[in-house]
Image (cartoon, rainbow, N blue to C red; front, side, top):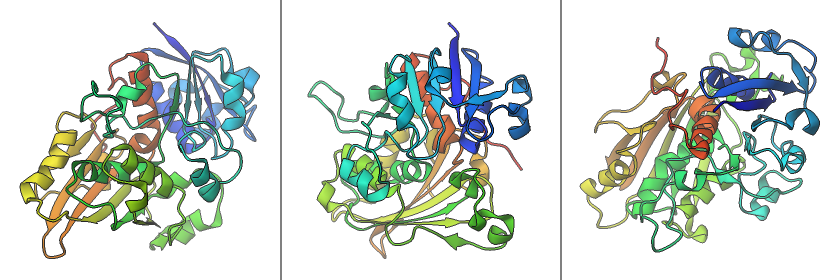
Length: 358
């Protein structure tokens, strides 16, 4: 079966990456692409690397144009998807790459985003551990079980999914504590979108590293907290996380270094086993051999998260280093992987574990 697809926000980075991956998907027909200020212009003018889609013209982003497809991807700025999702209730599958349907807490939405709160959708990080919802469910359940047959999917925040994948295995297994988590991320500016901003100009970021959203203000913090709670290993009131992203001069990529205290009495073998058990059978999330740590270059263009783990007994902390491509595993790849699961297709269809080098 071939599924017809519309992609909104198609002139942006996230929309362009969704299109790049979907163009290689044998079960997908990209029928419609939309934009706001760029409507009426050829897609190729804004995504010149998408040569196979040169026949498409950007249309206005309206419910009428987006309707009538099997699948709609919304790659819009935060706070803008919700105005369309109610109008798309007859669309079989809608996937939001923005934040509008990620959070389960309206209070958290009000604190970090503001504006109208929209119902939470199935969260698009299949590999995340989640607490069992019934006695019959496996104690090591994954988020992918909530994606099977889903009709509404919220793709993750790239920083949030990176830190969550880093820490959830240890918290769920009870080998690290959630009360003193510190995460520092080196982040490429493509994660901020394609809109012109002074702090993202080449002259502002080349040759320097710039922290932003310092002091607990980054919008992905409640998303990380939500993942830790969903895994069943952390009470919401017990979570304390210091989260600091730093813009660095690479167009793509996230390198997240996260540390958390070791629970007393836990052995080194038990610590490593928590991550090996969580990801040993996964295709796209891999724990590297002991003593090895990833580089962002290793995941460029791939739907892969590579994780390195160190046990620092002197500081009594575990250090987890995780690398992803923020536009693939952090956004578009996660969305398409989740789509595949929802439709009952092979999970890895149109997605690669191989990066691009040099």
